[in-house]
Amino acid sequence: MTAVVLVLLGAAGALKAAFVGAAFQYDLENPRPALAQVPPHVVPPATPRLARRVVIAIVDGLRVDTSYEMPFLDELRARGIDSQAQSHYPTYSRPSYVTLLTGVPPSASGVRTNSYPGTVAIDSLMDRVAAAGMRAGFASDYDPLPRLFMAPRAGYREPEPEELREMEQEKDTPEAAGRRIEAELRGDFDEARYAPWPGGFRDSAERLIAHGDDLVVLLIGVVDAAGHAHGGASEEYREAAQIADRALRHVLDGVDLSRDAVIVVADHGHTNRGGHGGLEREVVWVPLVLVGAGIRPGAVVLGAHLVDIAPTAAALLGVPPPGHALGRTLTPALTLDPAQAALVAGLDDQRVGRNQSIVGAAEAAARRDQLEERAVRLGLVFLCAAAALGLAVWLRRLGGMRLDLHVLSVGVPAFFIVYYTLIGTLGQSFSPSLVPARGHIASELLKYGAAGTLVHILAVWRALRRRHSLGERLAAANGVAWCGLVISMLSAGLVWAYYPPPYVLVPGPRLLVLIPAVLISVACYAVGVALTQVLEVIVFFARSVDPRVRRVRLTRSRSRAGSLGEEVEAILVDPDEDAL
Image 1 (cartoon, one colour):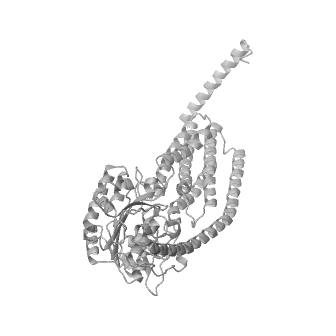
Image 2 (cartoon, one colour; image 1 turned 30 degrees about the horizontal axis):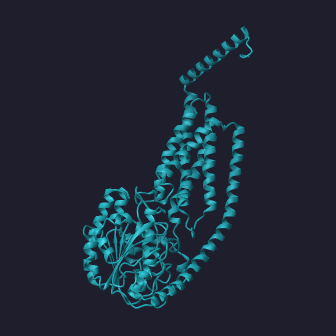
Image 3 (cartoon, one colour; image 1 turned 90 degrees about the horizontal axis):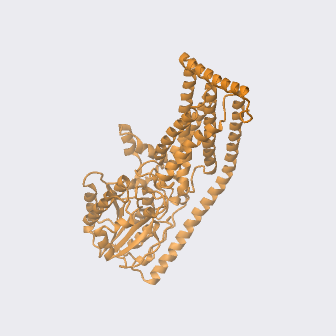
């Protein structure tokens, strides 16, 4: 009965922890950030238009070192500015796209992972271009980036994030297709060409540039795909960079650099093994090349960040920067005189100061709310821990559980040692970059959990082999189950208490792995406990009712008793102080 109770308790905890752990990546998102709840800070541009058109080419996943192996990109560097920029944590693609086009980092935009379910509710570069009576276009064969920049048409309700997620994830039924078509949403891009078929990107980009849109955003995904598949240090990754370089040469051939400006940048890099999301140098630092009209050739640009791209592009087009932006115009890169540069910097200071105060106030309020809720949750955790301890004392007195130190020292740590060692080694030192392929971090952690579960079952089985009494063996197995469940569930409880959603503040890189890892460890450990307990119960009943097993056990008992009797008789016949 003790074994059954432990299995049921473990199953309940496992299901809850599994659902919470799987939802963690979605819980990170903040569809209603503080900046979205205030009007954008928009002021007239301080300088005249510097370029007829601005082309922003995003080479997804391109590392700085690999970018210097691209001949066409080197040609652009020689004619313009060769620099680098820092991406923003978490260094995932869609959050970085939003950063590039709004000037707002993931912590303040609310877009923290590639699973963001809704649309961006903050001011964008496309909004400023449209307000100035200009046009903006997009072309890619890799990611439907414009999906992030949608808004309800006049007079219609803005759909909830869950509704948008369901629309995207629904199967291609007539009902689902009808919902997507009838959705009253409009995009920020005047023309969006998402062409995921052979030749689609080059054809779409050429047509877009020939059309003469004032702002053109190009997204090239071949490098990122190779990084996920083969790693950032692979030959395949370098070959993909060459393909992207040739595509840039072909597409930008129609750009007149005497009148137009080109900005080539990446959203993030890749680790040697593939993956991004963390703060590894090769992931955070990306190439930044500026060339063309309005760009000062050979200028030195230091300390650039992705949030600075949108304000800089706005200055080139002579439109106000996005009103929610936290980035600054890269004035050293532009052909501005000192007075103009100082005027632009002053307006940037006003906008950034106002927006930072809004974000800071929201973060301070979130910290206060978190502290209040943490006290309540910690009380609940300690109450549950006391109940678990009382249950253990009661079960031990009934004889249903035995805390055998030898069995505990082998059975309990096995899972946790294997699980967290795999995360620390294969998981690239507890970094969000641990997922080489594009996917959910929970699915990667489950692989390590499965390995730990298997080792746990084998370790407990081996530790219980020498227990001769069936009751003693099952009671010791119950002790391992209880101890491991308490350790894993207490850890999950503390995580639940200290870091509850919603996450206005983004957890650090290690916590971004440890929080779901702890939750998923409960699920995996509970599965291991259930399998172990079921196996032990089967062994218990099989050996209890099998007459052959009973005869063998009786024979062994008689043999041990006989041997012990002979030893006692020998001592009595020839007493020896040491023997006695």
